[in-house]
Length: 101
Image 1: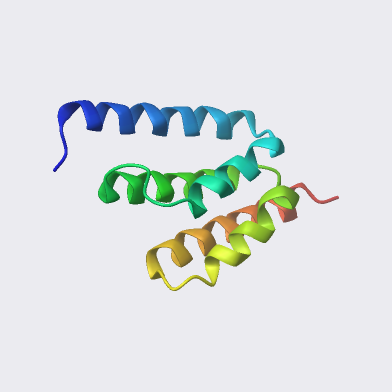
Image 2: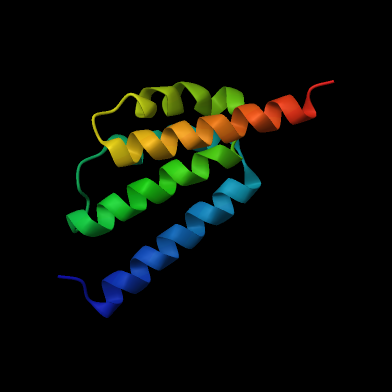
């Protein structure tokens, strides 16, 4: 089960994800995709939460860089992952429509 140290490490990783998302560098997307597709690097509960946070953060990256990944995730067997990916796609498309001339 979780320990205080594991909780702190997870929270730190989530904060790093959020900071990277604010920067929005498309070059990071392939690294994030690798993380999503990797096996459990640590306790499954922590890994799942981190994976969900990664997917949530994708909506802050350039649409062109993340759309293929989000579309793939939206078709996944996990309803939670598919739901989050679909929501991020919707937000990206709405944002793109808001900024279109």
